[in-house]
Image (cartoon, rainbow, N blue to C red; front, side, top):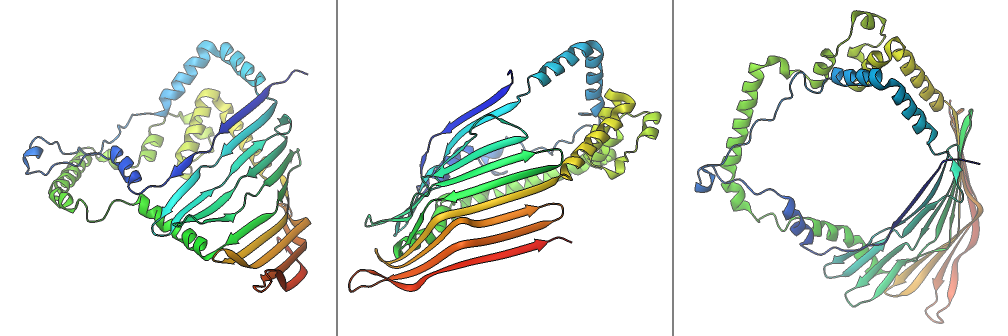
Length: 404
């Protein structure tokens, strides 16, 4: 079987980013324009005040230019353009194959007086088990090596999140009557460990990031700002005066660009009479598309646009169903006093786990959580063994919402 196949492969290796104080500010200095000298200073004698913002000309970038070029091209090379269009259409891929691997950067943020926080979203891989048609797509999404770590000033290492493999399977099916999406999320055993030092470093991380990204200090450069204030005010006044003078000389330019462009569009009386598009009730892009269709396609332009809009409306009104199933082996949460854990909570979501169903017409949303267990244990400091604080028990929930 002969077919066109689109194969896309991408690899992005992990980067290690160190947030160091002053580095971001130094890099941003390369992109900043030098400050203007004061108006009365010797350096500013030959300085040129900024000009008023340019106002586009009335006939600039008008739509009739593009329409005329399109008409000339179709008249001169209409047959060739049709052959090229058919050739391009024949080469549209019938199926696609994806293999994308994206590794999240490993970010290290120093927290003053406490230590360093290290976090990474891990490695994401999106692939298709086999070449898929656009109406029947199967995706496999895998997320691995997620980590969140805190390192104290005494080099104590706290792994708050162990690497958690996450596997997501997506099935998309499209027919003439409905679109269906089935999503299955499977998470391996997830272990969370929280210690006072680690939580303190984690809560201080946003402030540490802001201190790295912020400028060196609010007091720096105050003298330069005061010295240049006179020149800045003079430039603003000159710009405003120039702009007002330009508007007084050309009062027609004070209207909005959209009204100017719509008013300048060429349209015959017959086309205006046959058209059912009111320029005062549509945006500029819709009016331009209408005029282009009228000029290039003639009287059939409105019919083609109307058919395309009807097709889009049919796709939007098509039935849509979403099935989401999520379950994970276990969620193990440990609270530690210094380094030794003292409390452990373990939750298990076995199959079928969490099931979410959504339907568009009629509007229906259901949520069902079943086959879940929860247990809480504490550490006995005498013998170092875990003892149950809350015996293992089952829990579940069910919710349903129907539209009017």
